[in-house]
Image 1: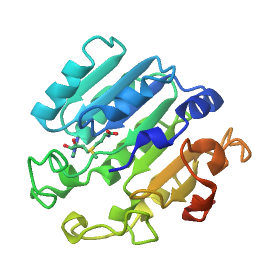
Image 2: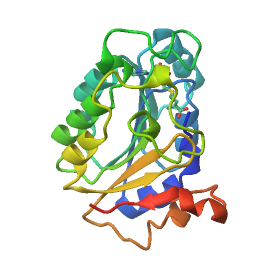
Image 3: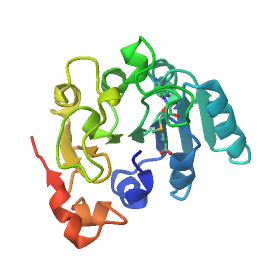
Image 4: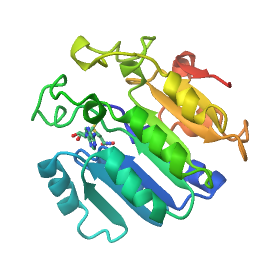
Length: 224
Ligand SMILES: C[S@@+](CC[C@H](N)C(=O)[O-])C[C@H]1O[C@@H](n2cnc3c(N)ncnc32)[C@H](O)[C@@H]1O
């Protein structure tokens, strides 16, 4: 499982003037808890599994700026994004419903769009957010391709059913965003709006909080 706390969110949201945070896949809420340390005005997180969503909602009951939503990420993004009127930092981390909590198998479920919703999530975001300069951090690149991931390639039961590729990321965001890949943990993709992108501000050493210099070779910047 990737960790949002690898990233210096304060730097990102300051550069792009981002008031909103939107996470898909809440799990126990550690991503939200970390995001709360940055000055977001409002934070949304969606979780498919009801018992996980309700535990996370209890955890943030006193944080009025946090909204935990229960449902499938694609539908909830479609419902909520029209009301998110400002730049947003997306942490797209929904996959394998209930599996990390030990409630289901990684290959459970017939609906691949629920099990691995990333492509559909990006389609909705690209369609509804053309007026905004959003930054997106995508977790678990290794689901979609092999590479020198620090935590190894993806186990067989977590592979996509078909079409294992990240072509869809370039299809939806290649024109508007700078695409950066990194092989730490299970792999991340970062998407920065080309408008306002300052290469010097987004060097990996600035983006990451916990990267030792010798790990630099795991980081690849891939301008398209
Ligand atoms: C890797 S965990 C998320 C970790 C969390 N983002 C964090 O930073 O601590 C993935 C979560 O996504 C949820 N999930 C899986 N498929 C989903 C879907 N289609 N819609 C919403 N949530 C989903 C799982 O139940 C699980 O709790």
